[in-house]
Image (tube, rainbow, N blue to C red; front, side):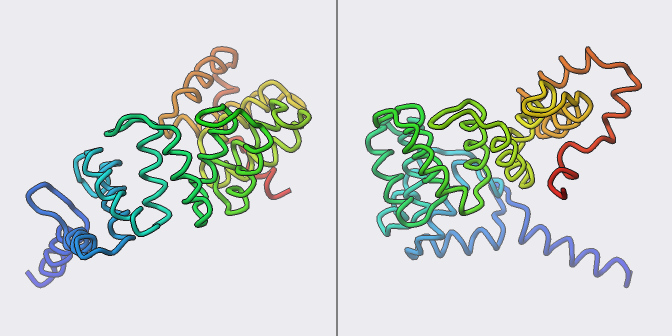
Length: 255
């Protein structure tokens, strides 16, 4: 009984603070909700984030997310501005409005949001709501990458590999992919695998490529899964077993 009591108390704390159900919101979430309702911009942003992602067990609700993001954005909260801009960019819970998305992303970026900087890079790269401008895209990606934002680092790698807004530069692409992959970016991991598989500015290393694809596929990233299956068909069982223990990129970072 004495041994079981601490376990019981710990379990109750776990339920109260970490497990959200529709009938039993956690104390942690109720406090955030109370702060949001009291007008705290960051708490309002968090509630919007929870409602758009389904985090904390909350049901996904784009309309509720928009309302919370609007409240945070009205206070010039960078996260709220970005979240609202992303809804308008995708037309999620609102009529799609790229011009408004650009305006919101710009305000958020000027307030230091790397996600908004990266989003602006995407818009300029693809010409969504703005004139297509690879150099402007690079500028925004670099600003976000300077904040150690992995998606922007990966995007810089893609542009370097494709020669967008610059001369094609595989060594630069490799460097950017390594930075993003080091933060667990599975798309960057996949792109590293492509470089190793096809020998882009390096010798072909199919086992290292397989290792990259395998690690990215663990995150259920479908492009990595497809490449993993295709490469597996070209390797022997012994090679695949060896590839399982091969380094994808860690030793390259250390070098």
